[in-house]
Image (cartoon, rainbow, N blue to C red; front, side):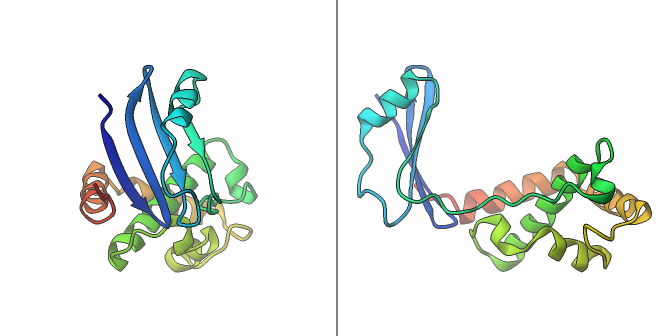
Length: 156
């Protein structure tokens, strides 16, 4: 028996249909996409080890910090990505939205708001300040964000 769970996240409707052939299968489609998923697509996705099927237009919902300046140093890029994600999650919770996180601001928006700098101008001292800010967030924040997301953004 397949279990169905639907999610509406930032303009994307995702329908997860149980576990098929040992793989979780998820079909993403937007409001302009098909009106109902084809279970055979799920089975095919599960059998070819992808577990994912995409139809319709997938909105751009991915934005990364640029790999420039201090972010080219070993380990710096991961810190920058995590700090940016935390800031976006804070903004999403404050706005009470389920929008795509990266639609809430660019990496430079984050740097200007929190540290009064940009990616191209960031100094080592500003990066260390960002690292300390990012490290100040604990699993408590992650749990609070997941509770918000589950209560506000998950449907079904």
